[in-house]
Image 1: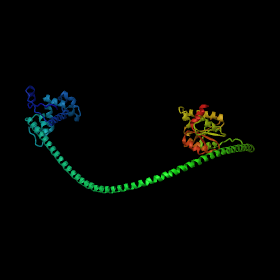
Image 2 (image 1 turned 30 degrees about the vertical axis):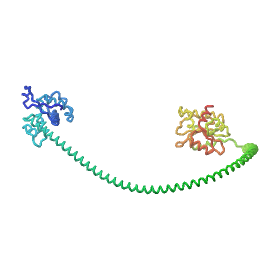
Image 3 (image 1 turned 45 degrees about the vertical axis):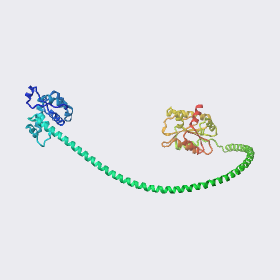
Image 4 (image 1 turned 120 degrees about the vertical axis):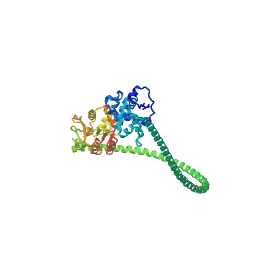
Length: 455
């Protein structure tokens, strides 16, 4: 409530016809708030026709919101509607019980709250109600003054306790500083002793340095003489080196001539062995085998979408397609291809089915051109049922579930006889290193992709 509530100690009918009002006393703020709370609490108990129109919406508020949100309207209605104030006062006095009866008689019990007494006196308007309000104001102010004095006493006690604590801390710090000063003095004495010892050591070091300088000058003279002797020896050695290089050049030429003779003899020997081997093959009637080493690996370590084929292959460990062609030209070469390693590098934009089909088709062309044995290996997890038959000369394998194409490639390489040219196409460094240890030629995937593009 922002403005003091008006009051009138005369009957309502007389006050309504008399325009000469007596000014109200200024109400203490706690009394104002209590008057508003009492009036708000009594609103729901009044008949609907006795509640002013302006407060009917406020009467529907929740109890904990009624005085807080409708306080301004309640205060204004109490000030402007004496009849409403009289109805509220009668209800509040009845609910107050003994305290309300005492206030109605114009008395304020000594044990009663002065704020409550003043609020009831304002609403009930008994004889001498202004005196009760003034007494309440005096009591509230006295209580406020007492609280202020008590606060000041507490602040003074707090400051005194803090000052005592600060003095205790200062005494402790002073003791620490005295101990630190004693320690510093002791360290200073030690430093002085160390300084004297260091000065003595410095003088001894300077004397030793002078002796070392004299010795260094003597050694420099000896080193100069030794260097002159070494230079003379180097000149003699250079002369001998030139003679040795000339002799070595003569020996190289002689060795080259001897190697040419050995090469000629070796060529004649190989020709003789080749002719003997051809005759032996005819004599033993050895023909080509229907099953190759890679077929045995496929039977136990891979899944075949179609019938196995024999073919020839390529091998190398660079991305040069020319080098790949050289390896494919070796007799009885076997080309092993890491399928998805090649397709995902060259045809990544296609689906897996299209990648497999394009690679197998291209390998069929290489098999037809070279007649080499070709095996392409895919990871079994990506396998698609119903794969069309592979071209002639191309073997298509899928690794078993739980195994990888890399391990199947290593098994294929280990199954081949020593000396047969094996070419493995994969850009996987681990695969390349593994097959190289077993004598195969690793080639990068780009070499095969360039070879397929050229075809």
